[in-house]
Amino acid sequence: MTHFFDSTERPPEVNDFHLLDNSPKIAQKLRNAGLRPTRQRTALAEILFRNEDRHVSAEMLFEEAKQANISISLATVYNTLNQFSDAGLLRTISIDSSRIYFDTKIGDHHHFFLEDSEELVDMPEGYIRVENLPPIPAGTDISRVDVIVRVCSPKK
Image (cartoon, rainbow, N blue to C red; front, top):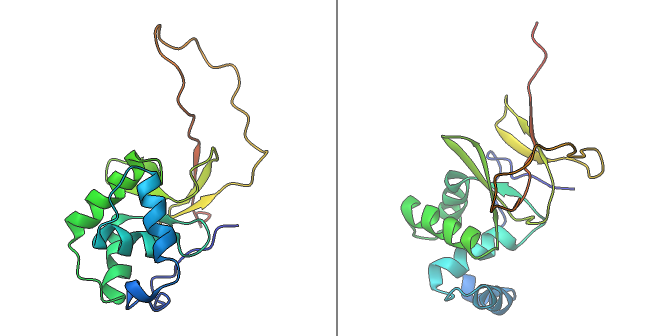
């Protein structure tokens, strides 16, 4: 089950990354993905991968980094998330042209998007089957199928 960071709560203390037990594992994870474990990449990876699978936007991760006293720009957070995604460490989920989330659970799965709270939630496995797709264009392969079901509070 995916747990979500409530923006009203302070994330766990991560004020001194070089003292965390997980830093060597994170550095190796970055190296295995072909990324150099810079201080900023390692710091953001510590925040992203310290708990269970989750969905974050660049703005959410930027706020968590600020609360953890990590000096980093929003542009660097965006760049790092895109680098992690390109390296296969994260899955990019595009809700629309202005909302992109990054998912630490990279295997095939689908999502609910809660429009009222703008949260992305993993769907339980085994409910969605994709069948009867039309023929795909010649010379292409299906890389993945994303299903995002948008839900909102009932209209009164």
